[in-house]
Image (cartoon, rainbow, N blue to C red; front, side, top):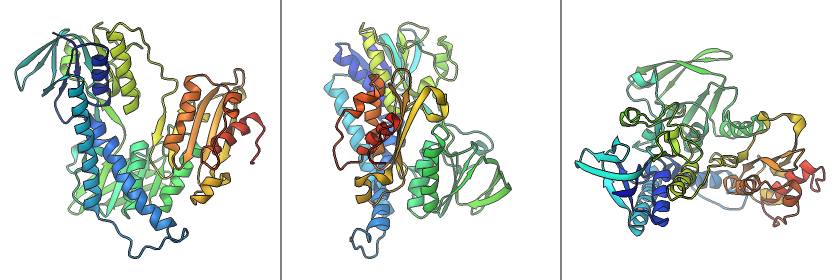
Length: 453
């Protein structure tokens, strides 16, 4: 009997398995597909590999001449771009396989079926695995619903990575994180892209000023954006699709080669979980220890139907492993960062300005264009924003929009996680010339002592 059996080898699953092994537990992991789950094979890694290639292409195209870099006949090879993607996927899978072996974790290949509180079966191999504890990390799958689910050839984000050639035109249903990242990739490649977002603005979980910068950037690439708009019907045609949509200015029809539905994901919960009596709402319900209503069964990551981010799943996996090992640990979601790999990038953590009472906070915002390093990089669009609690002087919200924002957000994560005060960050010397000085500028703005504005 194993101490722990983990179902699923995505970011949450493999991290939880490794942490359990490090804590002295005997561990097995069951995976029905490729190691690494959605993140490695159809999500984080392939998306960022494609965006890295197209970012370089866009940088040379838009900045090369201004920086004195002469490039004749600039073009791209889509096959090599996809080979770069596949190489990175394979490297990540090999890395996970190595780590599992290094930590003496037994890997079972096949679909896991939980048959009792202490038993997991793998029907393909007819293996029966006994475990003192079970960690469910089965992830999620892209949402697809009528009329899209009833029409052949509609893409989800999973299908993008299997395409053989770029479409000439693409309509994206949903302007959230995945939709905007996909629009960035295809827009850079010269594909005619349309985004339809039902909410007031794209990236609806972010503040309007953040979304506005991304909207302008996408429009510069030629992306057509329809906000407060709903797709009413889709018809399959010989050469593609006819999409009928309701917009604030009336119904419109758009003909495109491909339609990509990007409206979120759903928790991947098997009938075995429900039959066992595990509590399920939008996803599997857990406490802050990641424990379900069955004490020896835990759930982590997307299958919980809550914050569907790889880094959240990883940390939840560590929390579950520590509690299994007898270390009383609770999950703290106050400082979970959100990163968006658009152009420019977005990094945000903590509260957003749209969600707070204005009189209870101080907000400092510093524009990218006033930063020396940004000017060197020929970057103008973006800002740093900090939100400070008036009573405690603690930083409770942090957003960066600009180059490397997905890296710079860590200053905000550390500040919010450790309840750092405004003055503590202002008294921390930021190096010059760097983009991080934009954060210092925002902190000073919140204090009312801006030097460079």
